[in-house]
Amino acid sequence: MKPLAIARVVDMRPSILITGFLGAGKTTLLRHLLKNLAKDQINADVILNDYANAEIDSETLRADAASIEALGASCACCEGMDTLIDMVIKTSQSSNDLLLTELNGTADPLPIIESFTLLEDKFKLFPRWHICVIDARHFEQRGHYNKLERDQLETASHYLISHPNEVTADTLEQIE
Image (cartoon, rainbow, N blue to C red; front, side):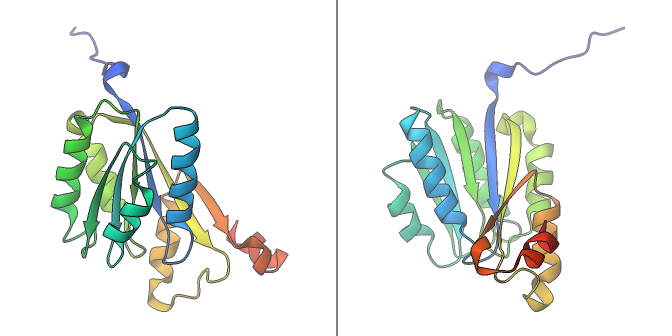
């Protein structure tokens, strides 16, 4: 019987995928994470996907990121998937400690999570966490995007509720 092959942990590095709708606080969370990681001398590569502000937001994060790639004017889960994969492969060559990826508000995380899993040997990203930022003020008020918002939340390993002081305790309980 052939022994079970186990990936060497030293070749892997963690990855955090950040999702949530426009205005939920994804970039604010990313900025906070980068500042705190930098304080602890943890170097993070960043991939930022945004329809309109990828380049602008990239510049505001550059001081605290080890490297930053902007995927603008497309959605990482569909027409931008090949570009995202190329960016992840490029950053996998990095000697930095962590990869942070922020998706645009209407990105479906499931195809990205599936791709990251299927390409794990190339990406060398493990463990992989998915943080969904939920804007409590607008949860399930997005019309035909309600299902996507729920999917972002249900596929997440962690979640953060932003603007909790602007809604009732019942609303917070419903979200949780």
